Image (tube, rainbow, N blue to C red):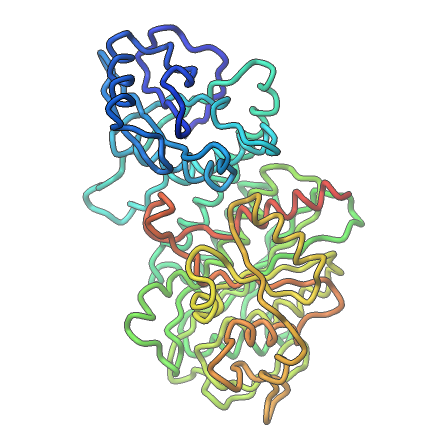
Length: 497
């Protein structure tokens, strides 16, 4: 999809136009109203007069134009409640409506969507980003291409003096939106095809396309590094594990990097602690954290941000094979700490342990791990937000600010010392399951905390928003959660430099 910034719209245009209104607005308050033919104006005015359109939040009416094209009447709700969160959903809603109407190109007035205290560049980025991700469909396995219509272009009509900022925002938004869709593609590929090997190959392809270094460690290399945690989880599968290392060097040579660590369990059966039937259906999405890291590093490289970033993705398959690890096993991690396995379905934290240890060699300014770690986090926060856990209050604030701007929303959960008792091992140093059935998301984070060094660290549990829900105006399947947040976090660090 192209997002085009235009400063002229010819009178009596026959293109599809989007007219947005707040509650209590009059038809003439929308600048595009003057571009309608007289007969079209009368229809719109009649809709307002008869209260067939009141501009309430989420309200939409689609009217035919004379000759060709459509008129989209979109309600924005109360003007005093208009904010970036609503703008994100409106951009998606417009695209979804246009797709359903098979409208290939439409024009939207940027000036009508402005938000107090949000820059033109930031708003343009959000609109472009979310238009791109709303245009996405995963149809590559369908023999009949159902719902395959995609919009070719969205025109953003602006005043000339806003052009440079809006152009910059659109350019960034398209890049980030496209990479969110890359992460969604990776997540949506079925587990029988998306093996650790294929995920590693996809990372290598991303590196070639976006000009960053990629190194893949195989089983033998991990054995030399004594990555007993990753190797232990992978033993039950015929698919070999891989450790993906991505390095983007956009900053000075001696600048310390930000390190992202993504869980790459390409399919999770639960191992010998087999998941129930319903719990296994979406487990090809258990590598969503890894997909987010691959896509985020790609976006950062395409944006040419002047900073150093490293992405680490331990890629394994968790299967109940005859050689698989068992409840009661003791795994020696790369750190030297012994992990006591109480449940083979708590495998994500085990493989992340070795990745967090590996991160030490970069002397990072910050490490953020992102993982579909626990159903408990979904119970706590639902499907709209990821759990954020960190002992570092400054880092917590920075991530929350980046989350609010990016649209990948998070909410903090505590990491008090008292929770540490939950994951103490009986025969090993640390157990991969809490002593009680409560607070599972926090127990998972407390486990990971045992493997960090003296760098600032945060854990994102993305189990809840890993797939889309109907109210988000996005195609079913992987959501690409985390990509926008990680990119925005990096951009916020550049501002602080």
